Image 1 (tube, rainbow, N blue to C red):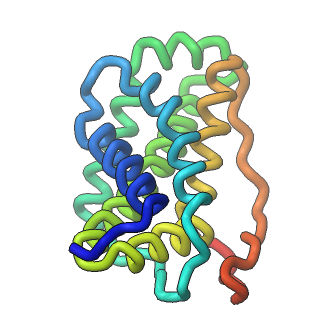
Image 2: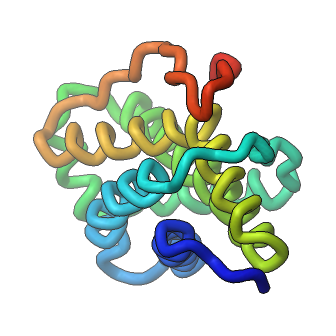
Length: 181
């Protein structure tokens, strides 16, 4: 493996921690760990040096794996006792609570696969991994990260998480980025 810049190493460590947390999601207290991890992930990706332009979003998920992880996370979120108590304070019905859990599961799933892809690239070329994480953050999983952070704050306060407005990510590295889907 090539040498790794300090910020890339920090990003890799947080990405590994996130993927491990999602892989071992059955552990008690995983939501509290996630709550502390998401801001660290946000800082790590934005601290990466300017991209060289070789990053690209990983859009070729294994649909079966993605669906399996999404369903697992959705079921886990809906069955979480502590989360259920917090959601009971929200002025929403059971069907809406299910939709909110599915939204969070979608956020966590998409972030997982983009971060995992970067970890695979890391073994070959750390700069390419850093570029990919940053590019895919600004074009895809960054909105999922922000939504997950807002979701956790809203649930903590007993209010319904509101959808984030559509926006265009800022230009990174001089070139315009496409609108995220």
